[in-house]
Image (cartoon, rainbow, N blue to C red; front, top):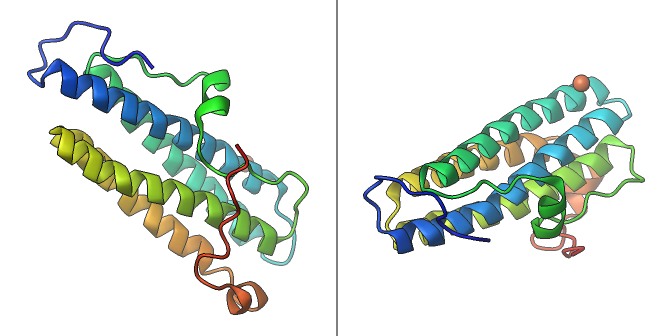
Length: 179
Ligand SMILES: [Fe+2]
């Protein structure tokens, strides 16, 4: 990551802008990955809860698309390059890899909850990091995203009734990072 590469009259110090740009590019990769994972779930889910989950996963995709735009445009406002190309996102995303061979609502609820929780953890950390760096506007963006992600996690987890919810122990549902 290259930090600040374009001149701007933005009054934030260049060192602040460079560090925030690099930090937000990390979260941008996660957000693009989340966006794709939500579509993957939207297309492939099957079972008795199909229509509710199919619609919910598409709403999450649309929300993630907004998060992507918020992050990318903040990066450019600070004089950076938003690094949203597939090869970089695939290498940089810290979200667990989405399982391909799943189909039931329960499996997709579990997988997308995992993605949302992983992204939520990283965005919440970015709230403090951008605040410490002195870019309160980036902090505001991360806070807005964090609030949204927590809501979507609630919506998805609310479908994890019965067996999945009953057997889940806090902390054990997160699969390890696949990369
Ligand atoms: Fe669709």
